[in-house]
Length: 102
Image 1 (tube, rainbow, N blue to C red):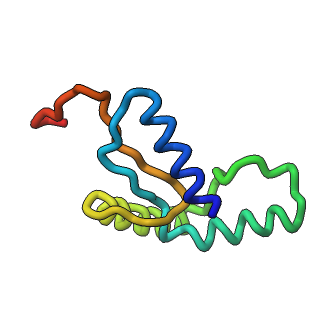
Image 2 (image 1 turned 30 degrees about the vertical axis):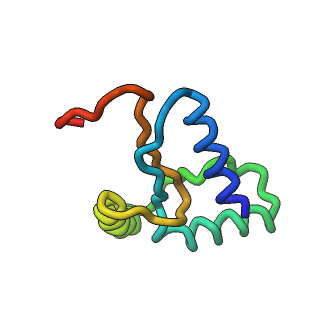
């Protein structure tokens, strides 16, 4: 679907820029159902005043969501995730070598 088309488009753009993709994964997977529901409600309500997903949250809710986010980032550091709200890509200029530090 649309997610895979965006991923293919991103791959193509990176490769056209003369880079090699070392890793392509997703993030914000645990939040996907919440974010998808919010975006669907925005469309159904046709609320044109909302232009961003970035809105202040109550401190307690933000703390809880931060726990999920940190846990997910620890997972994403080890394994590729097939879906999520965000795409995370590590690419290297063609011909550059990977060093011990990065």
